[in-house]
Amino acid sequence: MTLDEKLQKPLSEIGVTSPGQCQSLFEELNQRLQRDSAAADSSAKVEEFRIAWLGRKNGRLSFLSDNWLKTAPSPLKPFLGKLLNTLKGDVERIFNELRAKNSGRIDLPLSDDLKNWKAGVETEVRVSSSVTGNIEASQRNPDITLPGLSRQFGAKHPLTLVREQIEEIFISMGYTVEEGPEIETAYYNFEALNTPDNHPARSEQDTFFIKDGGAGRDELLLRTHTSPVQIHTMERLKPPVRAIVPGKVYRRDNPDATHTPMFHQIEGFAVDVDISFCEFKGTLEYFLKAFFGPEKRVRFRPSYFPFTEPSAEVDISCGICGGTGRTNQGVSCRVCKQSGWVEVMGAGMIHPAVFQYVGYDPGKYSGFAFGLGLDRYTMLKFNMPSLDYFFNNDIRFLEQFR
Ligand code: PHE
Figure: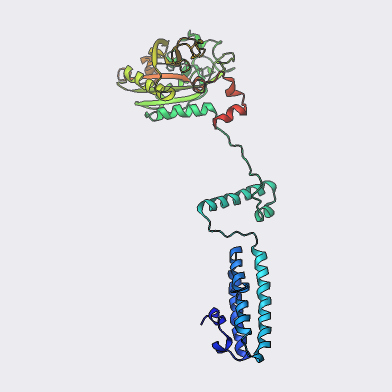
């Protein structure tokens, strides 16, 4: 018979007639009390403990007094009463201790969400306490009603976002991403790109030369375009080569809304056997539609660069006026200056002379190259009126790109 079953019967029915037998019954009760109190480690379990022992109708102490004490033979009553009182005192003391220890602990079955939330609160407490230095106190008593710590997350600069987007389009076409030095020699910036000594780009007005930076083909200067990395890359790799080269370039321009002495280009080039003008046009059209939108029209205009032949300027239809030259309100479009076209890159088939500089056989290989202005692409993409925003670090501008 279990203890609880015994509690339902008068002592005589369970064969208890002597003080000694009473004593051992109470020892059993005491052991049970110890076990129950050890198990009561949350407020819900403390409540169970209270109902099991102190419940007015169905608690063990009530059964004990109703079923045992009241029905006990008179000689046994005083002794039984004393045992009962001691037990009652113990139960109440233990209950009060348990309640104090477990107050405020909520014992719900935790859903996964709740567990995550709890883990979040606990880390937050650790973070906030390491900020206040009060680790002990705040870990013991997290005040989850306090406003959370808000952290300022950085954002990628719009130029970085657009560069990465352009890189991704070319990487998807099998291109690699290469880099080269910003301080160049005249050889790489001009000569190996078939740009003769008398070319206007080589003048003092257009290029930053490094003081005491040597002379002739070794003369040091800040690169005026990313094209010299074509040379570096072709010197290093054998065809087939398909690469793009993002980087900073420098020209002696006075800063205004659309010019800065430092700006960003992305060079691209492909060299292989049998690269035709078709692949050249197709690749650039694919890229421009992927970047600016499939509805854009693409146009190639004849142009001149010393390192490409034939050369072209590439235009897309203006995204502001839809190529009409006039906005919805009938105002002439400022972005394309009413032409309906926006120039987006210089390009061409790589000049055979360039291949000779890097030891590629121009009879065997052909290729195309292009250069685009990353700052301009970013301005077009986000419809920005001025380059200033890129460089004056106004957080109100930059945080919009999160
Ligand atoms: N390097 C040229 C410039 O800066 C652009 C260009 C690159 C043109 C590659 C043709 C081929 O203007």
